[in-house]
Image 1 (tube, rainbow, N blue to C red):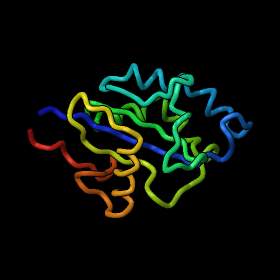
Image 2 (image 1 turned 180 degrees about the vertical axis):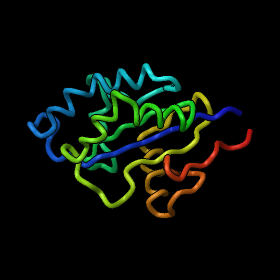
Image 3 (image 1 turned 120 degrees about the vertical axis):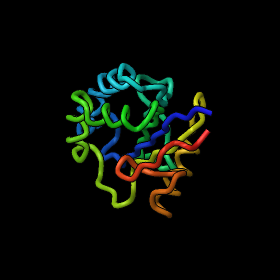
Length: 150
């Protein structure tokens, strides 16, 4: 069986999506998402049907948590995008738009190829990472686990 890498990333917004503090983030969303979709190794991303992103989803029922989810061919492809020329400037500015949280905000896990994770799947995986640290079921780019054996 083949596997793909699912990722979730959450952020606690410093203001409402239509507020001045979030303006540059929202203005850049289409460019960042287009770069992801064009990146080598990109498979899928969560969208809500209300524009270019997934801003309509809530994580753990919290209206201040914004969620990003995607699936990639593997950690190398995800890493290349995250630290690439289009996404990296936004990554550097994240504290302008999102509060610094002590707990993990990013989680990775392997899914069977073709499977698309739900927000509920991501909530469970991020909770697991926060409770147990990196495991084969929930890990990070800094503490990654290889895909399951077929």
